[in-house]
Image 1: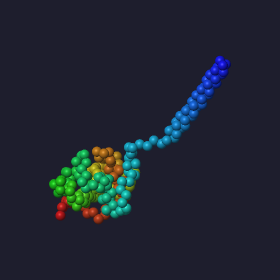
Image 2: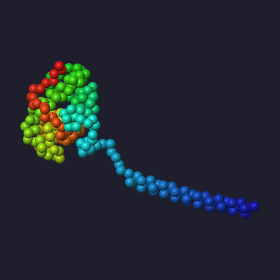
Image 3: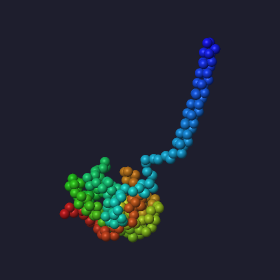
Length: 215
């Protein structure tokens, strides 16, 4: 009886050690496989670099390179096309105008402006006409050239001026890309010049004194 109990005890110990070793091997094999899988994974970051910002598509309505396409693409980039938008810096509307620019365009009632899609569109076109007048010589001189990897177009120049003002665009062009302006979100005039290149803005008239009229 004693011998039988001893045999059973020995067999139990042997089975335990065999099972433990086998489990350890499986665990190690699984761990090794996991390490290999992780090593093969690509790491994706949520912060876009400048080239990714330039190439990203924000607006998908098929308006082509028409002036309407230009307006809608720029408006979507600025505010996702929302006329009621007011950002944390106090910029207003679909095209994110500053109050000083609006006053220059003859708009003094900010509440009325934010509630009027028609006035916002008129302000946008008036501002383009003003900027086209300020940048008229630079448009003639630089359109068609490539600066800092960007082919310069009239619509690209006007979009960049909307972002950083015509003075910033002049500095960028005349320094051949060495002097560039970026807004509070880190978006540069170079990015806008590339992103909004090639739209048809030929109908815009240069007008130093253009105003946004509500009627």
